[in-house]
Length: 325
Ligand code: G3H
Ligand code: 13P
Ligand code: NA
Ligand code: ZN
Image (cartoon, rainbow, N blue to C red; front, side, top):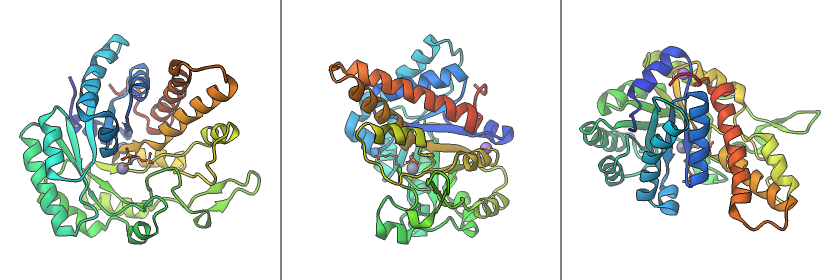
């Protein structure tokens, strides 16, 4: 069956790699994630967001994830290590419902609340979840918002001086931090970046590894999570733009930064936007090249191929989780 994150994170920290946490909203994404994980024997975290629950229905997603364990075995993966995780839970009731309905892990994201309220809410979720051996991710620090002036002004890095108090008081199993990543395909404004003189492409500022280091000094061996870690691969952006799309100045986190983070106590790396880009590239390309197509299996099939390539690349070439399950 599904597993929680506890053993997975311990092994990842000791082994100097990170577990991929991929969001899914539909069957093709799930098939692609499981195919890539089974082919590479990588532990994997399937994430369900609030938006995913609204789009696809929590019950359906839950049975799909439970079915994915059987699918993984059919693909020849003897001992699948698959987590079903609630992404960005925003209330005790939601986290409780996921614990009650077979999720093996939940995130309670109280990062936008005043510190004491974040502590109280997170502690309440941990106390409930641990009765069912469901692991809990909390968050400290606010990620910059997508094209949201107000939110990005209020964004701030995790304060290393808070992490011991937070993890001790709440009992969380892992801690999501803010060190310069953000959600979406536009992680930095062009004016925050430099430009490659040859290609004209944006080069983003580096992540705050000094803040990560300070957190790791306070919490030796404690599992750290990075949200907003899509790299926004130029190849997919180029395909999308070539076939009628319009994604100007899309920019993500360079993969060498994620490679570096994976070797540290960062043991869960969240990737959603890259999958959306691969999917959209496959659909746009197929429909542009074959105007006569009208069977969704034709363009969703191509989208699925692109996502399998993407997930496999992340596992083997960036996070280093291949062969660990
Ligand atoms: O945290 C953001 C994830 O990429 C999920 O996004 O809420 O649009 O499904 P979503
Ligand atoms: P991206 O938008 O960078 O893929 O981040 C996803 C994420 O953090 C989901 O929680
Ligand atoms: Na790691
Ligand atoms: Zn996130």
